[in-house]
Image (cartoon, rainbow, N blue to C red; front, side):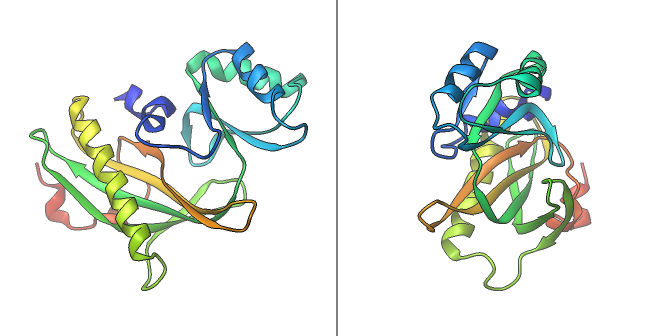
Length: 201
């Protein structure tokens, strides 16, 4: 299931942030960043990340020094996702369970609390009014698509799908329903899917 936890798998499940792209080589990464307005804030994410680690803040323009070294080392393990750095308002996670036969069960939308560096701190059930009906529909829909794709790839077991609410440069609030798929038991799985009967074979 390692390939299913890679950035490339989640990236193909739906549209990413505007302008985001998977790069497969150093020259491609440098060319993409050089084409951006100098100093524009971007974020690079390694193929495999955990609890906020494996991210690097970059800026549009020439890539040099430690940024170039980081990209070169990161690309060894797989494609790197380049995406605009945006203002996050709230981070979400939906937990699911897919059986060998493809039966899919999803937990409720939860809120993930992270620190300033993006590292996971805790997972809580969302409170009344914290998630709009439209957001809930999109988040659960993205989790269902992820579960179906995981089953099609031969996976069965627990998984989690991360998403977030963000604000664009015009001040408009938007939703990214699938930013990452974790085909494994996640830190907050028992909060988002706590019924012991769901742990039975």
